Length: 76
Image 1 (cartoon, one colour):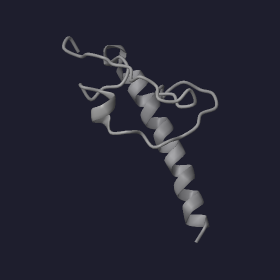
Image 2: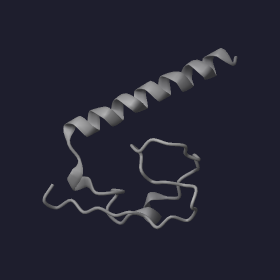
Image 3: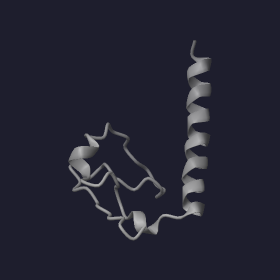
């Protein structure tokens, strides 16, 4: 992590947030290319990453993807 560098992209809309863990209402939008958002491939501050936060994010992604896939399967 000593070489990790963070970046926060400049928002192009007041309605789109780049914080993937903060709660609250959001508008989901297609992200522009990561090449436009970050020179390093990281958004935010990767030096604050840890195993606990990573597990929390993965668990939430799995939970939300499960809901989405069930909705898609039910819409046949």
